[in-house]
Length: 180
Image 1 (cartoon, rainbow, N blue to C red):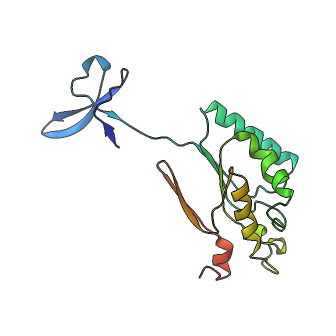
Image 2: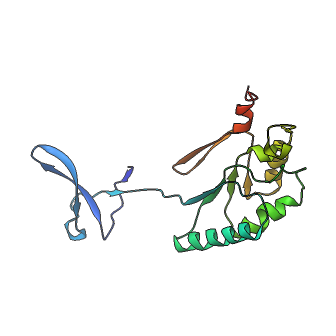
Image 3: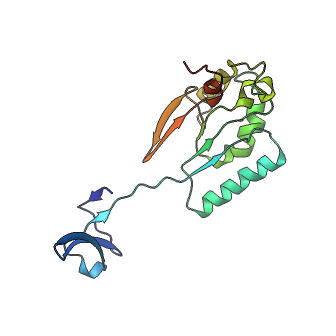
């Protein structure tokens, strides 16, 4: 863990001590802070959900439960949408009203961004692998340019949120050998 040598924690510190010739970390009380070090950790809280795109009352309730859980835990930094963001056959364009029903209404109140990836249902054909419209992926990318809470910069991407490194894949493209 990174250590900030200029910071001391008044309630809990870690000191290097030597025992039997080995250097090790040992808890020390705040009144014994001789040469103390405090580990600096960057924490990220996030939610990950998939198969969400229905606009149903249940999806609204899930969004409310996420809000309560995040509040109870001290806040959430971001969310992840793991695909199938729009049942049954994706969005019809970047202005499709389903974005309101399937994303903004259930999750917009949360106030943090969601990193989205594509699922088979996002590409048309009722998710069955027939008559898929691979251009439908572009509608979600374009929507993200309009709504800063929706993060999908490309069909494939990587992003870092503090110590969390994420890779977004379009596994449907991979399945159909379109990932070239």
